[in-house]
Structures are given as structure tokens and as C-alpha cells.
Length: 334
Ligand SMILES: *Cc1c(COP(=O)(O)O)cnc(C)c1O
Image: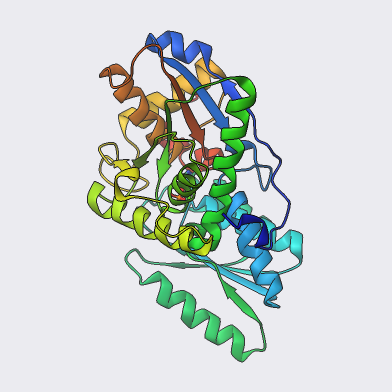
């Protein structure tokens, strides 16, 4: 893989820790659970978008851009992290937020990620659900270019082949950590949405021949389209890296049974997972992604999906800032 030829900003606080979760493992009766702390990547409180933005914004700067444009849901972690890196690099940032949930709670609309988008100085516009977001970004870009700005569009979630490179590097980092610790990882589990994280991980694992299976727990689309989206992006990423064909269709596995009513809508499983991780491990998950991802892992563990002598790693993709946009959903303070 020709990973080092791509321009990259070095802003991730890494390698992120790979830590055991003894109290959660005991509470669930095994197997041995680990957590890869990509919530600690260090940009705007961290999260998985840091690694993608290292490559995306390096490319934007290489192309001479002075303005970043991106989009996401109201409580988008990707938007918040893009706003932060734009501030850090002295770029203008325009964010289009889509009302994907219909929530009118004040915390959802103004706190958490939204508050930070504004604090980082981004230009924020809000549009109704089901707006064609790519077209909306193109329209905005044309408008800004007419004013003389040099725009660079980052797709939702930072998920294209360039962004996915960030998770190819994460796969290599994790494989290296496991080797140094003498740890055999039987499965890597994480929340999957716009697909860049899983696509990059699968390419990294296959490219490095580590054979660590990756399981994405879906947060939005049903299984078939989600796996297809990950597979298409993984193929594009492998091609970009000069290893076409590295990923086979069967390497892409998603479980989309834990979405509940829809993207960004809380589920009882998410509430339980967020509460368990907080009270057993002192770790903050998030309501939209890692909470549902962990809910899926907990349910699979309870159903005996894994053997007790296995080592399962949960990739914590961040997002805890989103808790403050969902305080209304939790019964605290009691
Ligand atoms: C964006 C995001 C994900 C999903 O990653 P994709 O690359 O979009 O699939 C998971 N967790 C958190 C906290 C996120 O912000």
C-alpha cells in the first residue's frame, strides 16, 4: 500500500490507547473486551473524523483552498471537527446542517455539537430533512467561488477514498499495538454510518494481511445498502492505495439490527450501553453512533455470538459532545 505518498496533517493525538474494559467484561460474563480510544484523537474533544480530516484537509491545502464546505445532521460530530480544523488551519468553514430527526428540544438544536460549530467560528446554515445535501453543497460552493473563495468540499462524514485513508492508518496502528502487546484480536466492532471508517479499516486489515475481522454496527441504513456502500468505498480506497482487489465482498460485514426508529433516535439499548460504559468504565459514549454500536456488541455478547476465550475490541469513534444535545433523553438529574 502506498500510504505515505498522500499529504497528511499530523494532528491526531496518537497512537490512541488500546485499553482493557475489565468491569464491563465481568458484568457481561466475558469474553475479554478492549476499547480502542479514538474518542481521544484530540481535535475538538476527539473522534473518528480527526483521522479522516488529516488527509482531506491536507489535500485541500495542497489544492490551494481557503474555504471548507461540509454537511451533516444537526448534531454532527463531523461538522464540529471540521469547524475546529478549519479554525486551526486558518480556513473559512461553511457547514450545512440537515434536520434529520425533527427534534425540537432546545439542547438538540443549540447545545452539544451545534454550540461548538458556532464557537469554532463556522458559518452554519440549517436545512430541512431530505434536502439533497450534495447538491446543496455544490450550490453553496458556486456561490462562494463567485465571491472569489477557493472552495474544497468534504463529503458528509468525510467519507470518500481520501478520508478513508485515515482508517487505513488506524488499522495499521491497531495491528501494531496488538502485536506489541501479544494480543490476538478476534473481532473489531464499531459503529458504521457514512462508511469511511469501516472501508478504511477493512482495507488496512486486508492490505496488511492481519485477518482481524471487522464488524460494523449500522446507525442509519439497512444491512444490504450499508454493506454495499462500505464495499464500494473500500474498493475505491484500495484502488487509490494501489492495491486494487485487496478487499473481497465477504470482508465487509454490517449488522443493522440496532438502529431502532431511525438515525439519531434514541433506543433503550443505546441508553443502557451509554449508562453501562459510564458507570462501569468511566467512559463516555455518544447517543447516535458509539452508543448504538456498543448496544449491538452487548446484545451479541448476551446472545453468545463470541467465545469466552476471545478478545473483542470496540473502536470508540467519539461523539460524547453529542450527549449534551440529548440530555432530554436521559433521566438525569434524577
Ligand atoms: C461519523 C461517526 C461514526 C461513523 O463513522 P463513518 O465513517 O461515518 O461510518 C461513528 N461514530 C461517531 C461518533 C461518528 O461521529
